[in-house]
Image (cartoon, rainbow, N blue to C red; front, side, top):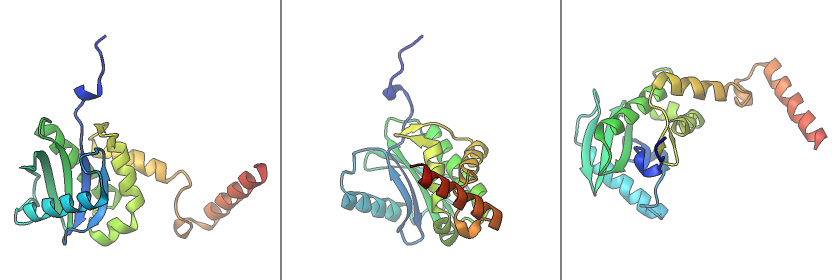
Length: 182
């Protein structure tokens, strides 16, 4: 069996969702290329400014920016970006973006806009975690990603405001039992 190394796997440097003004909605970095928060914000603003005039609504666009491959797509008032090193395969990175934007669309029930995304930020962050781990691409199929995230969210971690009374009582009972057993 061949040697497995992290370098042999396609990887991603960052995954971003910005609003129509270039402000963060959800971001995750998997590389130390941007070591400070200020450098991350500067990079996000630069990428947003460079891609703002393009029409990436119907399908993903690919650009080379500051030595990185940036694949991006706009869905309503959200801008999705996947950033990778310039030595990565653009088609694989585009597939990651497609899986990410489609799974977010499934999880938000087609209402892909800033307000809904912020209300469901936990699902979006779980979605990123299901797609990429430490920069390594794990999954790109939107249905599988959304299914795993929905399963994780249904494991009793739903906010109390969205639970039925019986679910809320069961959750409270479980928390009480845990605290008594400690």
